[in-house]
Image 1 (cartoon, rainbow, N blue to C red):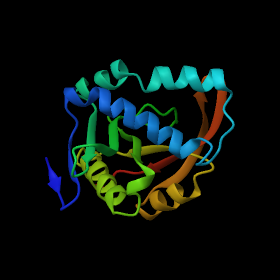
Image 2: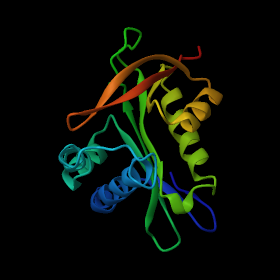
Image 3: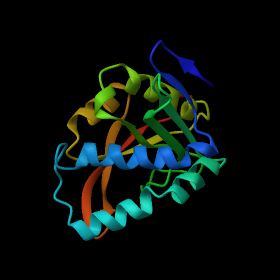
Image 4: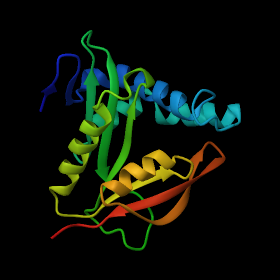
Length: 183
């Protein structure tokens, strides 16, 4: 599926996107949680380990190739990737989670394209895709990201628990949000 505007195109990620998507994921993580974002003081060794494991080209290629996952990318007019969303089977540990439930793993935009409506379009694509299964949808969101929590609440999600997300040995407090299946 390709959705276009005059400036941006949203499409499914392809194997050839592994390297540029890995770079985009790293940039978005740093823009969001680094010194110019939420400024979480990750110890350098923990941060380096997390980034190497999470944003390597091999990791991203595996995600793109996994038939149970789906990743959309947004290209600007020059063909540069500027945003993405990644979904798949829920991995969150919660007593209500069931086999077949879906999860929005990541939805990030470069800071330079925020406010252009791309986040809403990616969120719509992600939630519509996951809702088509008729199963519950889960999201893990950093406890300090109040804006994202409000966006998800506006889409019918409720906070149902918490967990700690490892960045190396550093542990971020995360909320588990759930939108129950609508039957």
